[in-house]
Length: 295
Image (cartoon, rainbow, N blue to C red; front, side, top):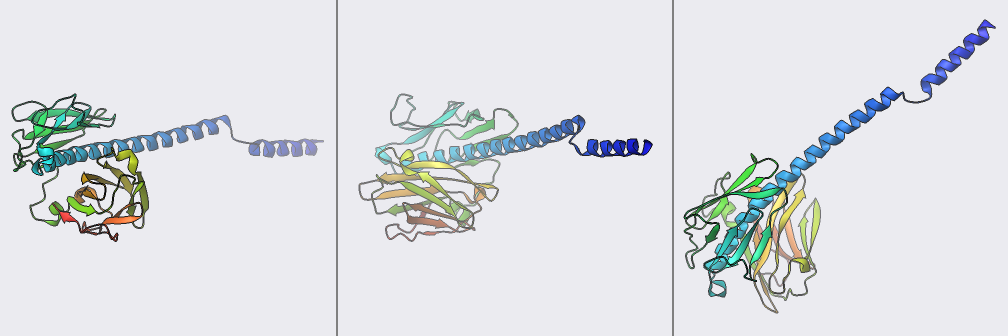
C-alpha cells in the first residue's frame, strides 16, 4: 500500500513539474519582452529623429544653394531667396518674400523638427541672393533642432559670399573633389514629361524607386530625401533647372560627407549618372545623357 502511494506521489510530482510555466515565470518572461521592446523602440525612435534632423539641415543648405544658383543663372530674369518659418521654409522669386505668390515652393519640415533660431544680418527671416555675384547681405545662421530634445540641433551658416553649409562641419577647401562633386549638372536629351520611375541603385545593397510624376509639376522635377544603405543614410537632391519638350537640364546635390555608398541614377531604365564610393562622378551609359559638369 505504501509503495503504491509513493509511486503515485512520484508520478504526480513529475507530471506537475512538466505541465507548463508557473505564473511567476510567465510574468518574468513578459517583463523581459517588454524591456526588450521598449529598448528597440527607443533606439529606432532616436535613429529616426537623428535622420530627420540631418536630412532637414541638409535640405535647408541645398535649398539655399538652389536659390543662389537660380539667381546667378538669372532664371526668369530675377533673383531668388529663401524665407524661414518655424515649421517650413520657402523658395521664392524676387527681392522680397510674398506669401501669396503661386510660384513659391514650400518645404515643410518633419513633425519632429523645427526652425529654432534665425540670426541674419539686418534681422528678418529671408535670405536673398544678388544677381551675377550670388552674394547675400543676409548672412548669418539658421538653427534646425529636434522639438523633443532642443539640445540636438544643426546650425546652417550662410556666408556673405552666398555659400552655405552646416556649421558643425568644416567647409571643404575650394577646388577640391569634395567641394566640386557636391553639385553635378548634366543634360538629358529626351523629354521627361511622361517619366515614370527614377531609380537610385546602390550596387551590392538595394535599389530605391521614386515615382517620377509625384515630383513633377508640369515644368520641373524636384525630389530630395534619404535612403538607408548598410546602416547609413544617403542624403541627396535631384532636380531640373530647365526643361523643354525634348531635353532636361538635371542637377544632383550629393555631399560626400553624408554619402558613403556608390550610386547609379536612372530614369525609366536610362542610366543618367553614376557615383563611385570615393565620390567620383561619371557619365551614365544612356546615349542621351551628357557628361556631368561639376559646380
